[in-house]
Length: 234
Image 1 (cartoon, rainbow, N blue to C red):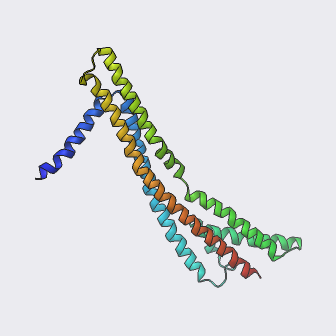
Image 2: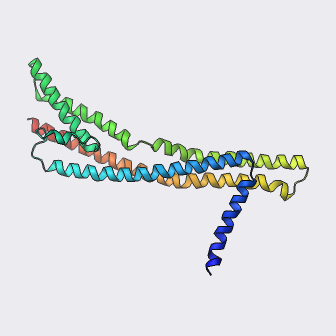
Image 3: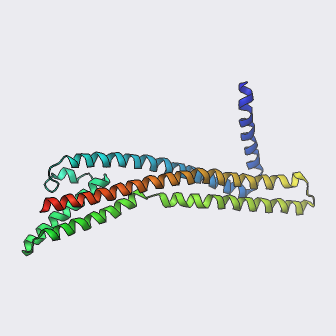
């Protein structure tokens, strides 16, 4: 019974290897390139998934800890040394800009809360844009793989079919032995392109939805942070 279940996959794998070895150099190169892109895509998808999950946990932990503090502007510097956490980065930029504007205002004799708040809000927006780019990093490369893999497979298909007809023209016969290597190699590149593109497009959509959710949460946090700083500065 076990031999019955394991024989078909083993036979299919051996058949794929034979098709690959029988294909021409171009089809082999395209198939190997798609295999490399598949490894890169899976590395990006898995790494991005765990990175976003880790950042979300760190963000919520920092926000919860910050919510328990009575005053944000007078917190120790240790709260501003956690730049690896996106929420902490926004907080650090906002507080540092607030006190920098206060110091400059005192030197010029024109210290007012409105100017300090504007500097803090501008700093929050800059940090927000910087962290948004961090959330979206590697997504462009993954999108390129999603878009490019089917076209690479199509290129291999067209090349394989052209090679098959070239063999027919040289041998002056349209039999299966003349057509099979080129056509099978063409189909192999098509399958390879789909194997790369299909998981990548699902992974890209899932990661895009996760990053957008985190960006929305960060925007809400930034708005709440600006409101709290404004209340404390009065």
